[in-house]
Image 1 (cartoon, each protein chain N blue to C red):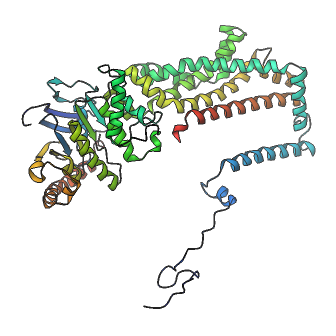
Image 2 (image 1 turned 90 degrees about the vertical axis):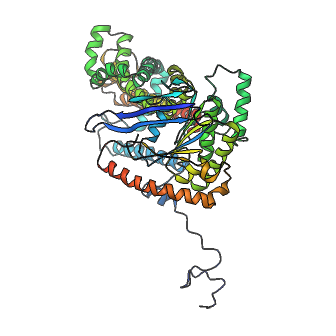
Image 3 (image 1 turned 30 degrees about the vertical axis):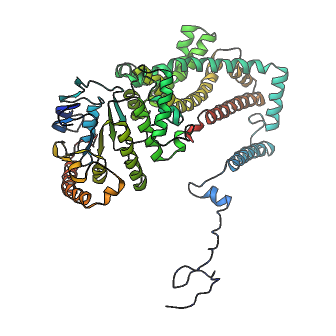
Length: 291
Length: 275
């Protein structure tokens, strides 16, 4: 076969094999194809844009429901009314103090449970006896619904700060300690054995290997648990309190001040979202070596 | 050489106790051997035959069910920095950079000064050819470099014996050959006693002073091959294409092929997965 081939053969491959010259570029998939393709890829910019669009759609539907009175006004306030009310609360009704006390309760309880859960979780993963003695108890308490514990905390600790902190602590500690123990267990056995074969004692393995190795996933779990703290906060503040976001929401309910109820919920959402994003950002910076 | 007996493996057997539905499994059957100071020993055998377990017993990371291991006259009772270990998987710490990973090998030594530690860190960095990568994060360097890093860290701890568990198993063929060659060079300057586990026959011949060929599970020593008698003690890469090398490889492969079939049968009959 000595057939002469077209030197600029861009008509595709002939029967003799591929044509010579540069192949035509394969078209890049469009953003739409990437986003809708099964397990497709995306960029950070598109991701943020999608998030904004999601919120915008939610707002549009919400406004529509109110504007066309699909839902009566006393049940669903318009977004504008909620924002206005939130502004009034902040500027005229010392709502900032309520936010402050709620944030304080959440963080105090969260820190107290982390301070106990981190060492205990690590010990559970390191020593069978600690794990054997504590895990069944923790597993049992973990399944108790937090609201069911409210009466007990009130009987034991009254209706002051202590009972609220205790309630939040119980809601998070028993979940957190198991997550921490798992994080520690997932540290590769090789890492531990490297430590032992360069002469580290168990306490040194814990401090110099297990702790840094588990840190990224531990911070993730702390972030998630902090979110749960907010859920229990509302329960604590609804039951017996005269301050806090939960208290504001619950007293507004009594007079069917729907915009105020929703303003309180919005405040929690915003605080939660910002905290979460902040911790994620810290995580990305501190653990850049993971990527 | 000969009966210097730096490491003495004395009638070691290992049985993993029954648990749950799986019956007790005997993985090592009455193995004895003597290893001289500075010798490069290969444990060769089919996957899952128990050779890694035997090496881990030497390292103090597992305990024998019967028998004992003596290192320089003392019974091995647990891991310490005298028994250095290079693992099959990447075992360097991702939160440390290259030079800090090497320093980690000396972190718990109190027999040398801080200045000496720093000198050694630089020495081993150079030895494994990672100069210029000091500040690189571990997951920014290649698999071959990571294994060299693991070797440097292990040597930095000042071990009497270097235990290597299929350290090049995860590398591609070119990298593997390159690292084998480097290891020969490192061994020349360091004169360490090495126990190296592999199931790759060519790797075994190229590296070993002596090959211990193990049976299928439970591991017994089937053959002891003094590689130097066949291909000499000098190991340029070209030795891999000599007649003598091929002849030795083929004779060992004949045995290992049969062993692999045997092991497969054992695995199919149940029992636990290889440790």
